[in-house]
Length: 383
Image (cartoon, rainbow, N blue to C red; front, top):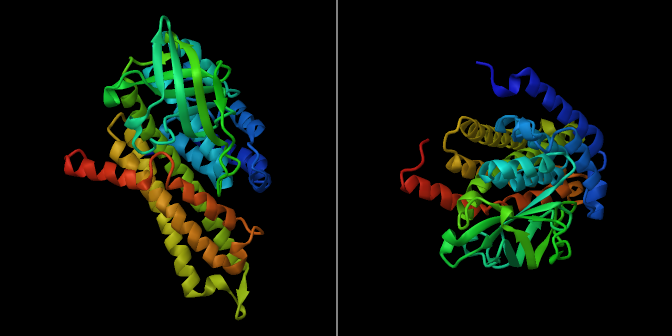
């Protein structure tokens, strides 16, 4: 049976992705990362090519691609530049609540703008004191007539300060996770401000900053889903987002393997390429195997999602395994480069720093293990 990725339309999409990534992203990634410059113009280039709206309905301007195809695009983008892959993943995450829980009127109003290739979204769940414990968030929205007035601070927000809209999880009552509501906040809303970009060890071109809401007023019509219904929306969005990060991790790991293999074939020691030595060739073999396994995990989870089957546990497994694999592969790639790998003259130094964050974002890998373990002990996981 022919798979989704072998379909002519999908092959053309992946060819286009590789062409743009090779021509527009790979040549400038190191320069932007060194400067910590957010590549807004390059993201518009991807958007105009339709690469930022792939998993959403065509009637609203999306690409209506399978999740498997969309994730493969993320992998290819991240193979050239992780920060861009993360941006594409987070943008899709920020649209998810409106696309899945918005009313028909809301989708008609907002989705064409969100998916037009020019706009960029941010997903605001984490706070300074509530990261993994999302139900503990304290940012509050108080009803005032036909508006909500929002006060609080969101932390670790990708695209904070550069997005055109913010999908914000807020507290509308003190009833635990039943008191969380999802609101759409335009970037030009009065009272919205941003912290300085976080000083990160890697993925410096990916803008990460606090989002501060000081009496931000939005109409009730900007509420996505029912009041108090935001937590299930947030969890569903994170399932999809974890697959995005898994695909990004595989792309980064593949870049590490590419660099390490090239170096091992070129570097001479004792009159032979170091790749001829068993110690190095076995490392490369293990790296390739981990990447293949991680790729298979995220694609299987994507196929479950495309089929409308439960995939939360598989998403957690894919995110856990792929990001741990990326960290291990990056470590070995640096080791194969020896002293040169520890310098900025070779890309594996940057890849090594970038890999670490993937074990943290969209739920730490310790949280993924909790998700998987609970599914197993409750009988909810089917191998």
